[in-house]
Image (tube, rainbow, N blue to C red; front, top):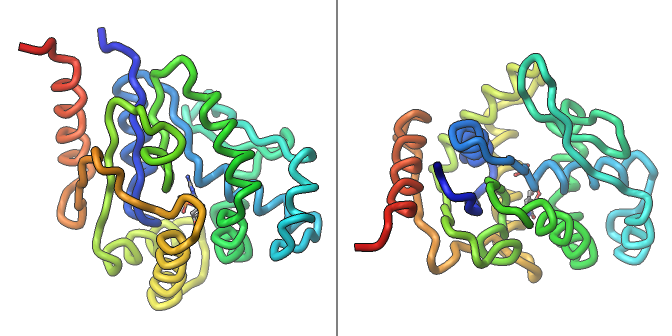
Length: 230
Ligand code: DC
């Protein structure tokens, strides 16, 4: 039996962090938390309620009204995001206004403090896989396993384009690549909790790795952590 540990997965937009995190959670029977979904749901609330996202004081005042949680579809076993009890999973993935506003919203310190506190509470009893941008550096600096996932921008844009087409979104490779590069820049240059590889994180470039090979590689890392010291 695997001891419950915290697995922190960070990396750029659309590099397959969530896919890997979900696979790992399933294999290990751990909880899975997609922190990007939390920033997206919060952004959706601000947009729906016409709160000026460029006005940190107004944004901070709205936080008491926002409850984010996760539900499980018992048929598909897929997790979905709830905003004040409403399933917003589809909306937060396809709404282009959410995609462009989320980097501005997630750069704000009050918002990060609000969500990081909830994320840390999710991990209190360990046995969790969490993915995001600051999980190994800020949310769980003590995580037993930290992964930093990368992939070439063109490959990431192509993967994201396929996902959007599957959700019947009409967009182009160029638009997807530009949005992704803009988000990379904002995520890595913001003052509060920029995307950074933790010094003790293991980097995996999955540009040329299949999902299965990536999972095997990480499961081997998990197993090696559980081996008693010689
Ligand atoms: O992983 P994603 O693309 O769904 O994340 C959406 C946005 O949220 C992304 O622009 C960066 C931000 N984010 C963050 O700042 N910190 C996290 N832990 C997770 C996401």
